[in-house]
Image (tube, rainbow, N blue to C red; front, top):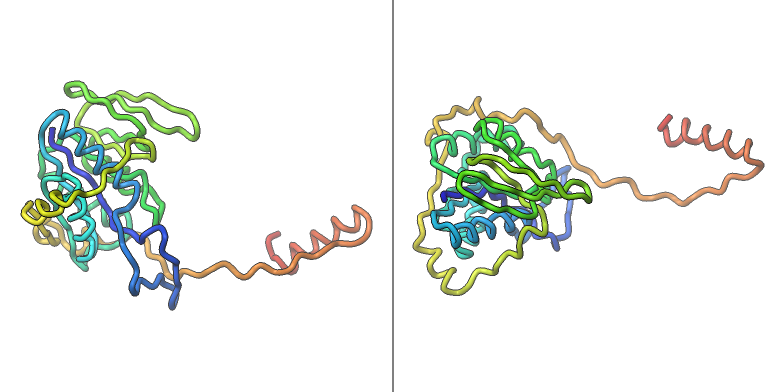
Amino acid sequence: MNVYVLMKQTFDTEEKIVLRDGNIADDGVKFVINPYDEYAVEEAIRIKEQHGGTVVAVSVGPERAAEALRTALAMGADEAVLISDERIGADEFSVSKALAAYLGKQSYDLILGGNFSVDNGSGQVAIRLSQLLGIPHVSSITQLTLSGNQAVVLRDAEGDTETVEVALPALFTAQQGLNEPRYPSLPGIMKAKKKPFGQLGLEDLGLSEGDTAPKTERESLSLPPERKAGRILKGGPAEQAAELVQLLRTEAKVI
């Protein structure tokens, strides 16, 4: 059973977000594996332990993302691949195109990833990737059972649970509750140093800069305005309603 795990390196969830010139400052910030991706790594390792095969962790990102991949290797993944090239855009379109170019040349039974990343929270990469690869996709899974070339999963559906059966190969994204990720052991950390670690750029993927040019761009990021003191409207109900409408129109400018 060959399993590929999609990973992203994100801010530690305990870090304080600081904005500088319309961007998030990352000076001295601690980075970790995206928490939802940890569930995917753990599930992939458990599948290997039960069914055999290999686990390959893949990430598209800057050089520092290598640290997250090495953590996956220490947890039990067999190989890691970092796709890092400044010409690859950072939006979901660009990342999914790069991943599809790489995975389209690999032999896989399963692709696992996190339900979404805690920094952007868009949850688009896996959906886009499955479309590009032409394989089934099920999101927010909390249980995965394999039998031959079939997979039965339970997925979180806004407080309810759905059971979905799909043919392999397929792509699944992990929700909290799928498992409890293990901590890297000291022997695992030592073994990770000797495991294969590849790094690829655009040319290695057979792509041009135009192929992965971003389709969206964030121009700026800002904190919401400070909350103003509340106001008490006087008069009867009709007078209060009239004044409220006036304030919403002239001051808040929401109507």
